[in-house]
Figure 1 (cartoon, rainbow, N blue to C red):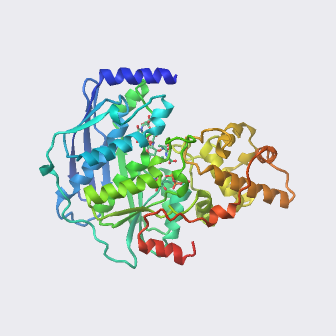
Figure 2 (figure 1 turned 90 degrees about the vertical axis):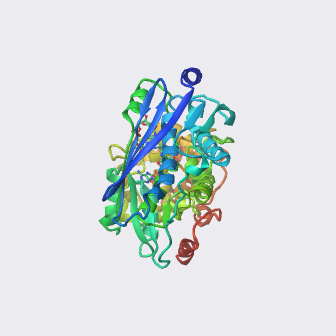
Figure 3 (figure 1 turned 30 degrees about the vertical axis):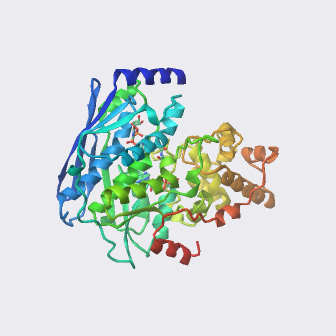
Amino acid sequence: MENDKAKLFEELRTKYPKFIYKGYTYAIGESSLDIDFNFEIPGLSQFNPRWSIKKSESKITDPKDLELLIFNLGMVELISYWKLTCSPKIIINCGYLSSEQIKWWKKLFIKGLGEFFYTNGISFNYDMFEFRCDNSQNNINFIKNPVAVADNSNPKVLIPVGGGKDSAVTINLLENKADRYGYVINPRKACIDTLNASSIPEDKYIFVHRTLDPNMLRLNAEGFLNGHTPFSAMVAFSAVLTAFLNDIPYVALSNESSANEATVLGSDVNHQYSKSFEFEADFVNYEKEYIKSGVHYFSLLRPFAEVKIAEFFSKYKEYHEIFRSCNAGSKLDIWCNKCAKCLFVYIILSPFLDESGMLKIFGENLLDKDELKPIFDKLIGIMPEKPFECVGSYNEVNAALQELLRQYEKNGMSLPVLLEYYRKLPGIPKYNLQDYCDSFDNDNLIPDYFLNLLKDMGK
Ligand SMILES: CC(=O)N[C@H]1[C@@H](OP(=O)(O)OP(=O)(O)OC[C@H]2O[C@@H](n3ccc(=O)[nH]c3=O)[C@H](O)[C@@H]2O)O[C@H](CO)[C@@H](O)[C@@H]1O[C@H](C)C(=O)N[C@@H](C)C(=O)N[C@@H](CCC(=O)O)C(=O)O
Ligand SMILES: Nc1ncnc2c1ncn2[C@@H]1O[C@H](COP(=O)(O)OP(=O)(O)OP(=O)(O)O)[C@@H](O)[C@H]1O
């Protein structure tokens, strides 16, 4: 199967040697910015993905100011379309990229699609594709009116909300400390419920509608190359554009330090690459160097491990029955209770909530499901690969399980099947959960105002 895909990859690249980013059009309405991108794989299909971004009434002083942001959103959007054929030439007809920028985009393609290449059995490197851009540097519309930080005591901040626990923690940590706006791409129930459960007023929900081109979905169904794309990189570019449009100087992500760990042990393949600090730092440099919107992008939760975020979240009961971290069940708004993400969230919340609290969320004890053992083995690190999901590090999974084991034994409770299995496993090193809860990663780009808030809260 993997070899078939690698063969298909070669065939498609030969048959479709070019991918063209032909252009974009946009219209600024009273309450939204509407964008149409135009991509083409000659001989195969045109693609017109669309974005509609809510905007405030505030006037855009110069519409041209939006163009660099829109062009760059198109650059990240095109990854999903390019991956159908992985064409060796990417021709950019609507914007200029310097050789440094081209290097930057090549890195995002290679690392952001690391899982896609790995799971399709494709080996891919920097020499296997090139970017050509026809436009001269003179055509760049530099931003003339960047967003300024107006009020440092209650700054406006855009918080991307995914419907899971992490963004709910950011929302709550910033309550009464910042003027919060909730940002959601294609809102699903858990995202809306999360915002409704928070104290963010409805007029500060900023919803964005992104439409995938049906030709891509058709070609996926026909068997063209498909797989994971760096979704969080798209969140980054679109959130900065949305913040700019709404005169909001900060974008606060909820990406944690655990996202930095590779998914495949000893390799660069990381499902969460675009949630890693490496991407965050690259993105901030790119934005400051080549876009200069004035918007500051950072992750408020970067210093923390997932277990610390779980500890915060365990206290925010108002979200417990509405949040959904499960990607597999995201369309149906359910916890599927079968996937790695469900089991992972179950494990890291368990030390902080009693059994009835856990039952309210999941409806059953996932550590009592013997059929989840293969996933469990991947989460604790006795297999060479973690699941391709947004899950925390091996160490913190082990630390949470060992703390849970301690609690069960202290209370004289009988162990669920996976915890009993874990207790008997030989050679597992000892971990202390508190060490992970106390850790604070200084590799972060949190602006002083927000860093001081975390410090004042004793975090
Ligand atoms: C696949 C994906 O990114 N889905 C996100 C997307 O959902 P949407 O309803 O628009 O599309 P799907 O039904 O999932 O996919 C249909 C087909 O289109 C392809 N595709 C989709 C999106 C895209 O950007 N590029 C594509 O090529 C895909 O391959 C299918 O063939 O948008 C939603 C929000 O609007 C997101 O919630 C969807 O995210 C999924 C729940 C999901 O599982 N996303 C994974 C990428 C994922 O692992 N998410 C991580 C974060 C990953 C990261 O750090 O990059 C997570 O949330 O844990
Ligand atoms: N549809 C979306 N719209 C806007 N931002 C999103 C969306 N989906 C995810 N995000 C952003 O990406 C981040 C990472 O997504 P991820 O699913 O890992 O986190 P989460 O939903 O907050 O929590 P959990 O880890 O419990 O799922 C989110 O915290 C949020 O900032």
